[in-house]
Image 1 (cartoon, rainbow, N blue to C red):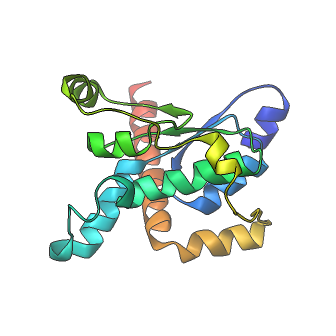
Image 2: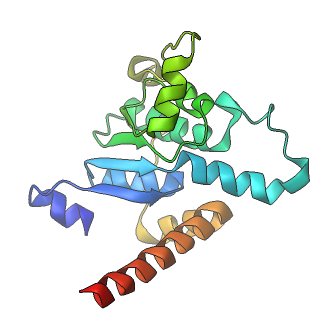
Length: 178
């Protein structure tokens, strides 16, 4: 649907994005913008590990949500994919600073205030020119390969299904209000 809209000049922002496979498909469809959910990815991994989660070891560049967006950003920039990456759903400023340089970031007022109050330097963590120099193979999917890749990613499959269910419930509520 997004590909058809983009062909008509109607730009789209695809959200509920949790996997590299989804990002690759969005790039192939020439989607204008994607919004990977950094914090929700982080939440899933933290919950799945449970008491064994090591917050310090999984902070900043080691955060699974940050790693996901970094892989997507680098792939897009390396291979000239024009889709913009807008990191979203941040839980802390460490995630934001680890993604400084991303095309766009959507940041809550609370986290913006924390960034403003910090004296720590904020440098580029992501850089398109550096990504172009990386040794990253091009990736593309046909429908069967996409479905398999998404299915193999338990976090993405669970979070996507959860998000779709929430959107459906909200649609029902909206229809009742109308």
